[in-house]
Length: 183
Ligand SMILES: [Ca+2]
Image: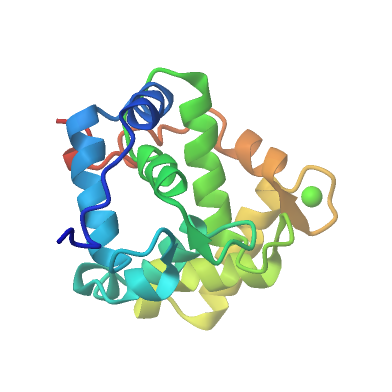
């Protein structure tokens, strides 16, 4: 009797996914096993499935990371979508990799999913990063400075294009790499 936790992956599908994501076939097979364990054998992985992971819950940025995983109003991910999101944390020379990393970061800030980062979203994100180490007043002023530096057209909100331009040559490749994906 076959277990519902061991639905085999289609070889052609995994080859195509490997070319697209630059993740190796053994990595994808290992993530697929993890995906099935997390989704309890269902074809789609939900946010609740991931919230059962202790590692994620203890990470203070967990909510934001999960939000970015499920950006664009998605409530569940197929394995291919899950693998593409994991691939964001891979070191890559492809120009599309930097854009994918920037988009992931932007989604962590744009909680409302409006396509803009508002002053309130900027402040909320900085509060997560800086916690109690700064006063409310300092937080407000840092937030205002970050926003106005990125806000080219002065409409008090930051689009993805403004965000990407503001980060310009800032090195994000190393910071957003997870060792397990780059072995
Ligand atoms: Ca703007």
